[in-house]
Amino acid sequence: MSLLIVSPGKDPKAWVEALKNQHPGLNIYVYPEDHDKEEVDFALTWNHPRGIFQNYPNIKVVASMGAGVDHITSDPELPENIKITKVVDDRLAEDMGTFVLTLVLAHQRNLLHYRESQINEKWEPVPYTRNNDVKVGILGIGNLGQSVSKCLLKNGFQVIGFSKHKKDFENVDSYAGEDEFDEFLEQSDILVNMLPLTSETEKILDLELFEKLPKGAYVINVARGEHLVEQDLLAKVDDGHLSGAALDVFWEEPIRDEHPFWKHPKIRVTPHIASVTHPNSVVPQIIENYERLQEEEELKNVVERDRGY
Ligand code: NDP
Image 1 (tube, rainbow, N blue to C red):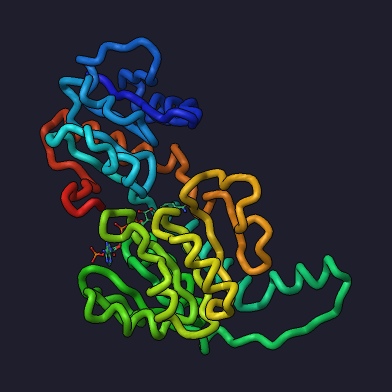
Image 2: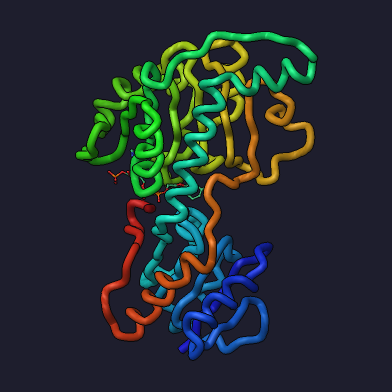
């Protein structure tokens, strides 16, 4: 049987090399090059063309090249029997943790203000709040959210987490379910969105949510662009309720020319680089699952299709 790589717009070379180095006997096809569809039982994908997996009669697994799986779950024509897997990787989690910490510290120590002052050749000290006086709320405290929380705790921040089910993480107060959502939001001086994109979480970062955050709160979105109602964020930053935002993900990537985020003095934009998958680090778990499939063993990191993550 064979593994198919489908990653339009993303060069698959590093993945092919890593797969070949770590499993020399593996037969690999790269979409859309000529290949035998009946041979394929496992696909490794990022943003596949909708509906294509219907044409592969023996495909059993579609593995995401990253931690997010919304690019797979959003395909309405994905056959029901196909299992979806995602990446769970220490390096990815570490990178997410250090990136969010960087954004939090940059906000905390007013670095955007000083960049602006420098451009204007102005010497303008402003007061700052100390880390242990700041509470960071992590919305969606799963694999990556936990890594973010560890980085923040090490640096003295107070951390609270919100998830579907209650958690028991050291030094992190856990909130779960609709009943506790407002209590979680009301305490979050900085809100970090780490939710997966599902039908329940799309557009969750909206006016109503922002108004529940304390005045002066800061919003960090490193999960998915579709979580955010962009006009609502702009309205709450512009009316002074929010002190600003750092955004790594967007509805449309890259964001269009003239998008109001580009030049907004209180909004920091980064091009979806919070945590980038490294093929060499992730390929061992892809191969392990490929072999598990051949041996008819249980796969690792399987997504529950009905909940979407
Ligand atoms: P996980 O599946 O490990 O964690 C998801 C968390 O969200 C869980 O704690 C889950 O709760 C919670 N959750 C899900 N739905 C809801 C809901 N409706 N209400 C409350 N809580 C909810 O995901 P990861 O940590 O691996 O990844 C998170 C996201 O990060 C990815 O889906 C992806 O979109 C994004 N990402 C962004 C990257 C970037 O570079 N910007 C890179 C990699 C990922 P529970 O545990 O109770 O089920």
